[in-house]
Length: 109
Image (cartoon, rainbow, N blue to C red; front, side):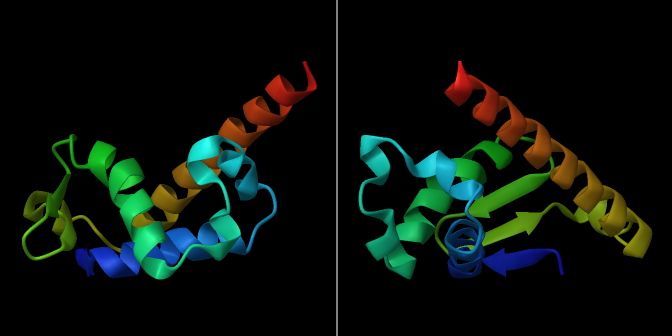
């Protein structure tokens, strides 16, 4: 799959924060007040602001605002297989762990 609806991105974003206590540390500022009560539309809006907006600045992703789709460019599609996916997920997991370990460290200081 090389493209998904923005609503699917929003649903995944919602699951990411609602189902993991560690991830909730991102929602401690005024902007995210009452995040527990947000609906899918609000999570989708947040996902579009970050990470979709920033990923779309790279040459590998595209956000089609009219059709509300988030895509990986066609040049990458030929390389997407199980091995690529596992490697990519490993990178994401590493960055996630690194991000939250720094965030926890900052909170302790």
